[in-house]
Length: 214
Image (cartoon, rainbow, N blue to C red; front, side, top):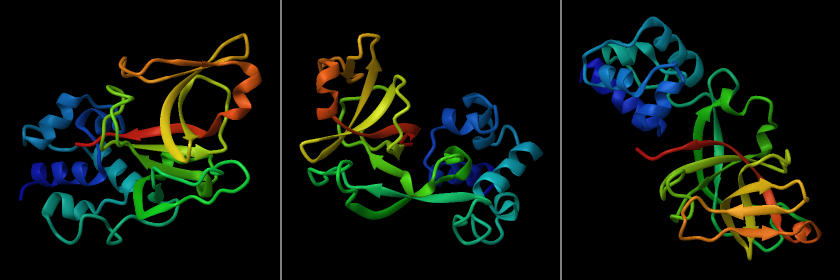
């Protein structure tokens, strides 16, 4: 296995598409593709960020020696990456209100700690997308990372509990105090919630990152 193949294997293990992976290094998709096809080699800057942000074993990447990550997996501290619990898409009816009894899949999503820097780690959760309501922004198999109880009052993608199910929707705030809950897929009509009924909508928190399937 050559550097190009190991680089591609690393990206897929981390769960990124070429475009999103390139953003970490301020590189285009074509530049990432060039590394993965062997036309270019990763620069020193790329190698440094891989080591610092993802705890990648650079000796493995260059020579194939040892394991992919320098500590046999992601570091469980702020030196490299964090494990984020993946929640089940179904929850109890009081999720996010009186109790935070969040069913978990038992699986954790490894992400760079820099993506959640500034948020209390115990409130950061991940959710797998299982339907097409947010296509093309999100597709089945993608993951979103959100922060529980993070309600900045700004437009964006939020996690909502509806009837005991966790759903991901786009929320827009209007000057009237109303909110618009919508899907990116035009097959799902938007819904306007008046200001006097917003408390009936159980918004869990706002999405801060997405990980697209490869």
